Length: 131
Image 1 (tube, rainbow, N blue to C red):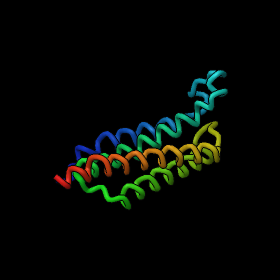
Image 2: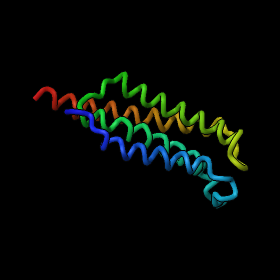
Image 3: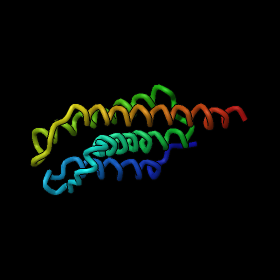
């Protein structure tokens, strides 16, 4: 199957949403004290970057062009984007905090998503090739 640009549109939209959310000025983000107890911010980071990895991997899985190496590269690039956005928060965003644990959460989200994509490839895509 041929790679089609339309399959990348959800990933591009998610990329834009992630960027906007992470560079919003600090006072524009609501704070709810009980969410700090469960480290909600870290879960959000893991979800945003796990979603980014999954959505950029999907077109390659769908087109049956998802090599293991490619899926790993997508996860690494997504995690590096998370690191870059932390530095944007530090130097360019208004009243945002630089946090190494946010970077770790971004990487964990990417890792989990990469593992899931590799599982999908092994489970479904490779079986489709055999038939």
